[in-house]
Amino acid sequence: MSHTNIWCETDLETDDVFAIRVLQQRGFHIQYLVVGEANACNKLKRVLTGHYFPLGDTVIVQGFDSKKEFPTDDSVPCAIGNNNELDLDIPQTSVESYKEALIEYLSENERPILVLLKPPRELLACLDEIALDLIRKATVYMYGGFNIRTLLNENKGNNIYRRAFHKLFQQLKDVYLYESFYATGQQNSVNCETMPTLYQYMMEHSQSKYVKNLLNWTRLWNQHMLTESAKWKDVSERSMKIYNNIKDHLDFQMVLADQALAVCIENKQLEPRDKVSIDWDDVGLTQLTQLKSDNRTKVYLYRDLSWTELELYLLCLF
Image 1: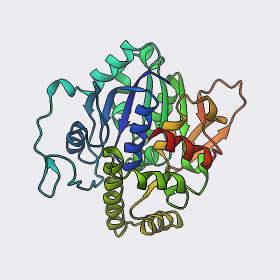
Image 2: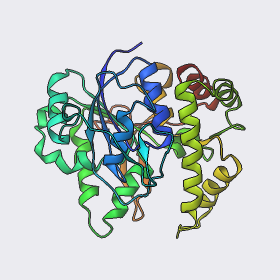
Image 3: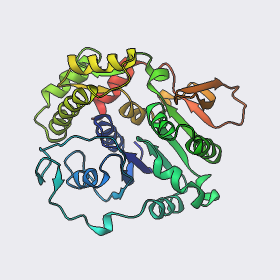
């Protein structure tokens, strides 16, 4: 059981809510929690209600907004109206600027761990303002893939984010990268068929606070994704697969992503398989080169994880 202080960043999607609960159950102390993407202020207010997971003494940091739509969850206490504005005063002591909070966290902890469950736009924006000796102390566990691709595709024709990612990876102590395609292959949907034991557990405990709230949020998120799919310009096989997974399992379906990363963090039974160098093609898809173990590159990739083993961990930890 770990009692390590960690820095965590979330966009509050369903796999993130699951992941944060897993981290807490594993004994990690989330010293700072950055809440961002879409309407970051409303997300932060949702988190402060303690609806999705207990907060304890966690310091909440409001991250940047993004253009991504985010659905209403009317089950959150204090939710009013159709835009999910919350009638809730945010304690000023709970909200600090990102840069100030990060410097404080890195300075206070000898072995800082950054858990990045969302696109790390705030970190990249202030990277040049963080002392190099602080950044070099930090180990990052992050979901790559979509989260990196999101930022790269916001700046097509401009390599700012690409250069920033390379600079970040060079400066950090270590980077542990989880991407579903490499970790679990084409199958990355958690539902009643792929993880039946976990599904059964959720149904049996559907009235307990955090299970009930996660299931409700999962259903609302899936409904939102089906609505959003009508706007998709990309009708690739990958997009249709996502759509069908949601449509067929509306009440219990989420991507196997951040919650699996949360299981892997500092887990000696699930060590990353490969040491890699990383780049991205013109559409932001990851390009990896496997390296020899003695190479000085510090990026490690999780590959070929067992679904059965991951399900067992998730079952025991939620």
